[in-house]
Length: 336
Image: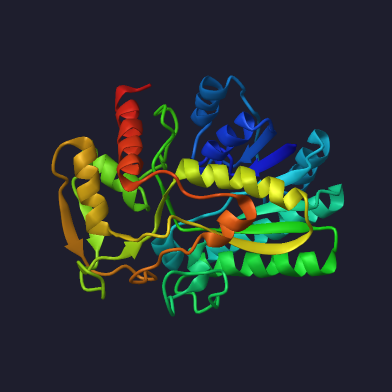
């Protein structure tokens, strides 16, 4: 299936590209490169033998999106493009609403105009807000979201549900990720954001490599075993495989659906730091900082629906997540 990946040069997009190519799909990528680079395209070619067709474009540019969809005969879209940092979204809400929501509406209009009616959306567990109970199932109420980033994900889910209600031939699957970490086993692609990382693991990796001084642990007074925030961390290759399976699922059905992708186990920030210390072989400096706006105490997934509908289950453990992330960081340091 010829599939367009918006934001496809980024962390999750590049790994999903590898999984799709290995599964026999033809991949086209568009990305505005605001938080990634085309270096991942070369790495994808090294890993798979195929360099996907690439367009440097923005999802808010309807003419460009319509042209890409039509010229390539795109059958499905996997929509990754979006700003994604909780803390930053609280400081820059308008940028998040413009890029994430307005951009998605523009993309959907271009899809409608070119007859493409299958979409996999990169959603998030943040749509659940503060959990009423754990683990989180898809039946848990959504809303009560604590930050603009999560509100954009929730609004896009609702937009997609409305599109599916209006167009009975449209298929939309919202994959509610928990916290992707790790890297491809080759060490050639991984999470390497421009500037200072907003996500925990690339920050930890850069501290471990001596690039940054110390990890800021935002809050140690949460109602969790060690006082730091607990999250369900999932290896990015497990997540990528989930997208390939979701694509096949979406292609054989119509309507809207939402599916959790997580491991079903939560780890605290301090547990992640200590696990990474084992991977890199030395202590990692950290300091306790005030809580960060928009954060919640804990969440982790019930991913039984993914296993039932997609035949998917997470395979990588925390040790492998940290080991592959460190391997990628070492490749970066070596300049490969």
